[in-house]
Length: 184
Image (cartoon, one colour):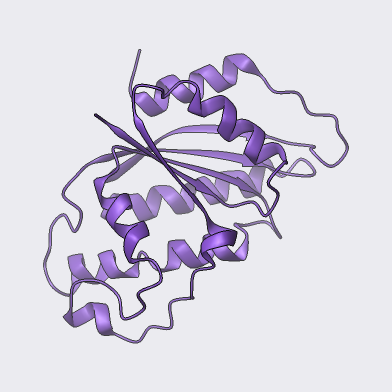
């Protein structure tokens, strides 16, 4: 059975990102779904301690289970708002902790540092029209996943959530799902 890992980057349990997670999950009923809320797991930041340059893993053990699930996932879907033109701090901390894989690749020669290839998607919402910020965020994920044996192949952007002028576009949502799953 394939595995979908959902990474929630919003602090709101009843906001736009949660609503979209619930909608996307219904398209993956044939998969095992693992969900992590970055605000609830409260990841410690990477402090460049150099542990991962010489050892497999990270000196901080708070994300060990997360990284086990991450390595085993077939699909990874990020759901996040835009905060100050980028990811909220807990999600940024998770992304920074991918350093363990960059060190595995470039310091210890593991190529790829993660065996299982992943299809990756990003659902990004913003209070205003911050398409340029959303583009930058997706670009950051694309760059990261070139090392993480993944391909960012799906995105869905929802602007203007603060003004209540947004609507969920079911065509775009289904396009996101099909792209993430690799379906035509």
